[in-house]
Length: 101
Image (cartoon, rainbow, N blue to C red):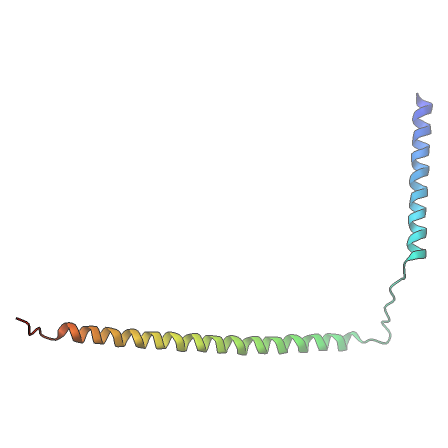
């Protein structure tokens, strides 16, 4: 029984090592490594470009949000004025004396 356990353990470990080496071999032979050329590209320039994009987008968002808020405020003012006009007309009609008596 102990001999069978040792035999199965040895075969399992051997199989795991074999599969591991096959995977390593195929990974190195069948894939193209990614190469970054850090010498010719400047990270500082990339960061500056990113900051410019962020600042431009923020400026656009701020102006579009400001325009949207102004349009909403104008729409609310128009509604307020219409309500005031309707209310004054209603009060005028209610305050007029009735002549039907």
